[in-house]
Image 1: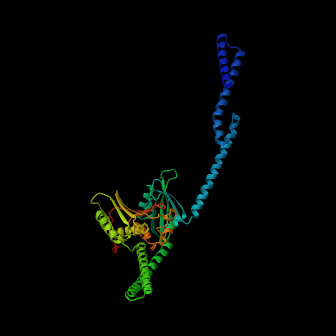
Image 2: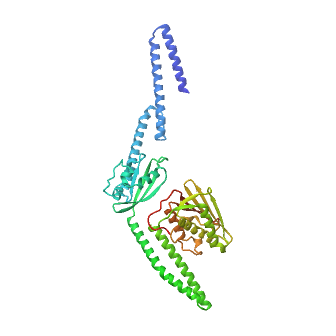
Image 3: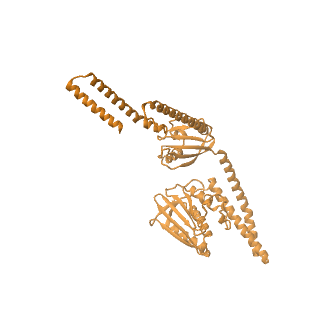
Length: 437
């Protein structure tokens, strides 16, 4: 306010002085006063302009606000120091990142927005082999030299993570493609490469061992069963009859376990081949209801079957393996449902997907165990008192993957469980090799 009044007074003085000069001619005293007043106004305007620049600059750098022109050099020095600190910090972080990338055993590649290779670490070059030297600007096809990898990377650009295997230079690699979105929108794809050659060899050995053991045990189990059945035909005492029946039940459980182990081994090893064929959904559901009623009539469990699809809908699928998936899920649902309960089976066809939902009225599955129930031989705490091998859900998971789909579970303690199987409806060409039957 004070500066404004002084400026106004100075301007009035200048105006009066100019008027007197024009009327009475030049006067040395008036001229000196006019020059001094004009100089003072220029100094005030300069100080105000400096403050307009210096005050915001000071707020950016520190709490101290430069209030005059003599504070500007200090503010500028502080800004230069801040820039220097930022450059040093960025250099340290860049050096740390490069050191980490260099020392990683896993390969890392980054493809940019134009689908060209922008960055990679030495491990990526080593895993892909020296016969295919990497260079920035290469396309996914030039880097991996196969048909599957570019398709998987393209899916990642659309926001869908992908994982696949690649054989290169006598190695088996596991590749993962992740959408790279540092600013919120996908601007590239980050790939990681893991050498799983040893794991694959161990897994192959394990599968062969399990397959051989289960095959070799089937014959003696069959012999024991025949002997137990012959014992039951004999006139045994009450204790002998009870022992023979217990032996027969144990043999049946062992035969079931061997069958599940053999089946899972065939799926994992790739020996099992799908036989897709056109299937009428309405007819499939009718046959499924008949099988359920024949198998579980004595249990008192009711089946609630629902289908949401147009009449006459047909799909291309392996009916035997689809039935196996549903039978395993329904068997579990019946096992955990209370007497007189209801098991729900619903199928929905929408777009290029077919979804089956199997629900029960059992005790439910705790959230902490839902991520493990599809593992081999894993049994939830509430399932240990129930009969079973612990392989049914593992078989369901692997069959779903083999058919190009997935299985998920939704459950809350005390509210039952619902397993959802989602399968693609795209036509599937029969695979070479013996049929799955």
